[in-house]
Image (tube, rainbow, N blue to C red):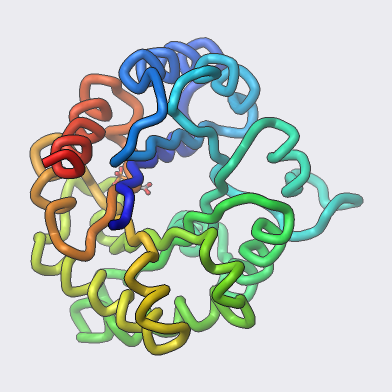
Length: 257
Ligand code: PEP
C-alpha cells in the first residue's frame, strides 16, 4: 500500500515570520507520526532554518525547492545537497515546471540534480508535465516519456526508491484550471506503466505519483481517490492553513477509509 504524500511548494513566498507561523499551524495539525499520510513543506531557502524549528517534533517534514548538482565551490547563487541536509531537509523538489520553463532547465540538468540529491541522502520529488500546446497536439504521453527517460537516465532501481514523481500539467499550475480526474488518472497510469517498463512492475507498484496543478480543498479528495494518484504537490493552497489542512485531511480520510 502506497502512503499518501501531501507536499507544499511555497515557491518565492513567505518571510521568516510568516513561514514560521504557517509551519507552526501545520505542525499543530500533524502532531506525530501518521500511518497513512506524509506531510512535507518546501519553503524558500531563507526559511529552512526557521521553518525547521517550527515543525520540530511534529510529523511535518522539511524539503527544499531546488538544489545544484555540484558539491561546492564557485557557483554563485546555488545551494548544495550538503547545505540542504545540514539545514534539516529530507526532500528536494527537482525539475519543477517553473525551473524548466521560466529558468530554462532541461532534463539533463534535472538528471544531474536527481543523481546528486540521491547520492547525498535526499529524497527527490521529480516533477514532469506537459504544456497546454503539447496536450492539444496530442503529445502528452510522448512528452512525459521524454522527461522521465531524460531525468531518470542511469538511475538504478535502488536509488529510484527514494524518488516520488509529481505529475504537474503546466497548464494547471497556478491557473485555477485543474486536470479532470480522468486526465490525471490517465497520465498517472501512463507514468506508472513507463516505470514498470523501464524498471519493473513491483517497483512501479510501490512508486508514489503525486498530482500537482491547482489542487484545492474542493478537488483534492476526487483527485487523490484515483487509483494511481498518491497525493498532491500543492502551490498556492499550501500557503494558507485553512486551505492546506483540508487537503491533508482529505488524504487522511482516504488513507483511513
Ligand atoms: C506547484 O507549484 O507545484 C503547483 C502545483 O502550484 P498550484 O497548486 O498553485 O497550481
